[in-house]
Length: 232
Ligand SMILES: Nc1ncnc2c1ncn2[C@@H]1O[C@H](COP(=O)(O)OP(=O)(O)OP(=O)(O)O)[C@@H](O)[C@H]1O
Image (cartoon, rainbow, N blue to C red):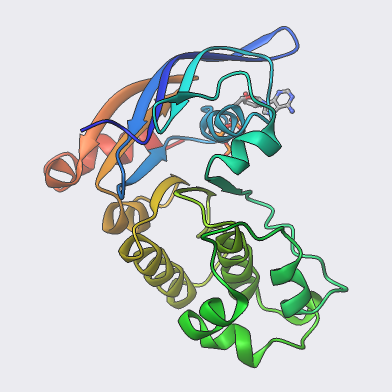
């Protein structure tokens, strides 16, 4: 199968600091793949590099067979990638509907009505300002507003962070809904329980390198190893 996203020998830098060292990974169409590892291991930097937000990097990144390594982030997004950063970036003075309709829609993207039908709580909250949403509702809004652009691959940075277990479960259900619609997901997580329920494969990051790759079928047998990678 031709991967949807292919990252080859990615090296990334913040000034003099060499943060990613030869990261090679792929995501197949419709697949959910997680990047796990401790704080500072390089997971977010990988997403930023793929999106073209961090430009100080070497290596090759292809999407749908096309080289996107040199494209600026707006052109990367136009190819069908969407990034939901950890900080969620909901505008607190705008309503839910205004937040939803802020990013540009693209042909093939979800309409606001389709989003409301799939996630009715957002319709109920449509006129509420962003500041009045719970953390879980903010995460839901941040995840689904990018659907208006009709992405083929969603890059999610720690969607479970800071949320109560029942809300984390709801976020997992949203990811299931997105997967069922045919979308692939590259998920950064430190919550192994959450990631292992969702992901088909896991890449383990240590100090800017991928040191292990664990498919879903091996997670139970290798749980101790995975927890060791994540422990501080
Ligand atoms: N803007 C920046 N300038 C300089 N160094 C940075 C910057 N952002 C991240 N770093 C450093 O790059 C390394 C990788 O950080 P990154 O955010 O990718 O890690 P992470 O695995 O996503 O962890 P976290 O969960 O803490 O975000 C860390 O050593 C971090 O301190």
